[in-house]
Image (cartoon, rainbow, N blue to C red; front, side, top):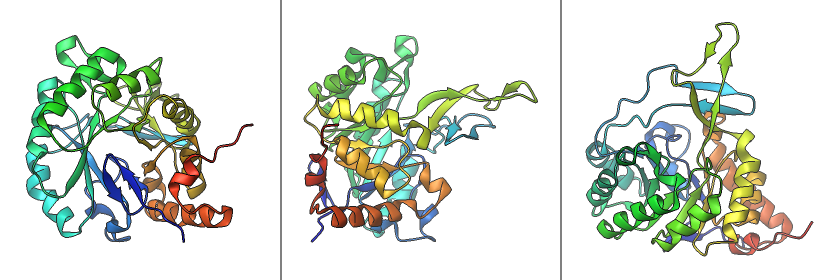
Length: 304
């Protein structure tokens, strides 16, 4: 028997495959392809305290082996999530993880507090790749003390498991991971997108209205695996791995590097069925190679 169940921060999931925030909407968008309840969990579109219009177009461009986006956290705010989307997700009995962010500690805490008693939410995922406007635009996730203070404050207002999504755009991701673990984080998500830029040589101007954007897709997979491998050796909390996973074999790499679960992002834009295929291919790999559980797979990395 192949056991695909995993436990992340006390939350038991029927399989370790979820979908990354901002790539899956709120589940309805993919319902015509397959039942979203097949997934381990859904991480809904990033949520802020108040509605955000996002950046002006163009804000997405395909790149070799990847995609640049500068959506700008467009969403209708936390109240809209609770009133319009959570009833649908509860009806489908889908474990929901809410990715959330803010420009101040107070905004993060206000969102977390609002979601505290919202039924159907199994965990929160704090996106700390946002600028702290009270610290002159310093990104929360780029400084150990700033990141730790944010997590401590969020933990004061919620009893939900808190996953912290780390930015790869730092010198030492392990130090940030340790800092947020010490501050009370229950799990980590890594990696978020890498900062990139693409220029239209005919028009001689950047493709994106914001000049730079977040690079995702297969191009960043080696970076993600390296950072997960380093971080997994330094922390004791679970890691949700993401960054360029397109197939079940890609997911296996993340588990071997130390991830406890994986999240599919850009792949869903290429093939809407990608998350379900990853689940199937992961099970086939485990059966073929004699693994009965994800836990066994996580400790199977051999020396070169």
